[in-house]
Image (cartoon, rainbow, N blue to C red; front, top):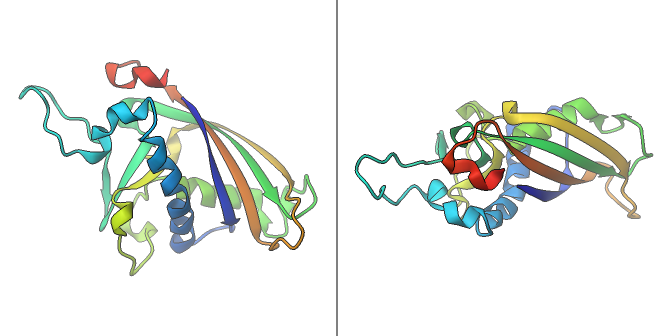
Length: 190
């Protein structure tokens, strides 16, 4: 399965939990909508976890992850033996090619992005004093863990927009899911 996510906003080096959560919240509506489309709409019970299994001996698959007071729904999960490859296009109001950029080195900016694409590993990686919004329960995110990223390709170019904020970026995040073990639950991801 392949799809592209879009993000426009700041992408800081060594982003704080608040900044990572802001990016996570910006991507949430796109990922939530993706679950309404084929083939994911056939598996919506994986992220609602409300239906009981048809048979008493059948185990219910639930992708939801609880961290502190927040509930997350990752698409790429070890529970269904998925990984992902990412192709990221980073548009910024700077000269193309400068890998060390004025807003911070690209490695640390990508680390901020990868953390934002994931379910936070611990409660201290969540913003303090925030509560989960009703329309974000669960918060849809791309990854259970960034260890499920098997390859990354990054292309940078100039954001061709006059008057752009020097800290603003536009990201196109193309994801291609990969099956790590063939099971019935992931046949549509092949």
